[in-house]
Amino acid sequence: MIAIIGGTGDLGRGLVARWVLAGEEVVIGSRVREKAELVASELSAQLGKRVRGTTNFEAAREAQVIVLSIPFEGLEQIIGEIRPALTPGKLLFSVIVPLKVEKGEVSFERPPAGSAAEEVARLVPQGVRVVSAFHTVGARQLKQVEKSLSCDVVVCGDDAGAKREAIHLIERIPNVRAVDGGPMRNSRLVEPVVALLVELTRRHKVPGVSIRFEGL
Ligand SMILES: NC(=O)c1ccc[n+]([C@@H]2O[C@H](COP(=O)([O-])OP(=O)(O)OC[C@H]3O[C@@H](n4cnc5c(N)ncnc54)[C@H](OP(=O)(O)O)[C@@H]3O)[C@@H](O)[C@H]2O)c1
Image (cartoon, rainbow, N blue to C red; front, top):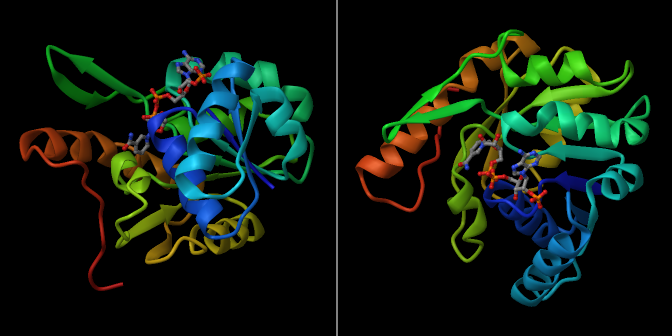
């Protein structure tokens, strides 16, 4: 089972929808159980498949795969809340990007560890296998399930087995290719790309922008 922590947000809803349609069992986590239940019932109605919602902690406890889909500001608090559920062997995706919006301008705000994913790896208990992914796909495009995707997802991480599992799960979503982006520190190269996607989305007034690499 996959738990999407912050699954009530834009990116989280998109991941829930795409994975549920691919046949995965997914549970939505939220800081507020009722909010998760509401979003789960909306998605169940939209997709014609059962989706459940609960607290972030319960979702993380039930699942072997956990996606942290929250703003960077909430990272320490949420890790604190779900910590007892972060048992060794679980696979944890970080999709988080530390973005700053100032006078309408979006920029990447590099955290002390170098990237959000490295901050996640620093904060979680030992034995939790962290990967960084989903930075090259627009949240709104993920959510528009009636439209097929065509994009690449770069996966960074220091555990080869975790990356293999992550790549398998990512490629369960039709027309999404997972690209091995190397060690976790390379998340420093990938995360800032989200600021570019946000800027292009705004400048060209489109619902979302995703990336497909040529030559790979
Ligand atoms: N949007 C994109 O295209 C995109 C692409 C790649 C990566 N990302 C990154 O992916 C992450 C999620 O993106 P998003 O657009 O889905 O974010 P979002 O909608 O702003 O937030 C996602 C969920 O996180 C929870 N949340 C909000 N503030 C929080 C806080 N201070 N502490 C703890 N939880 C909080 C909320 O859920 P509850 O209120 O239900 O708890 C919210 O629904 C972000 O780090 C973003 O930068 C986004």
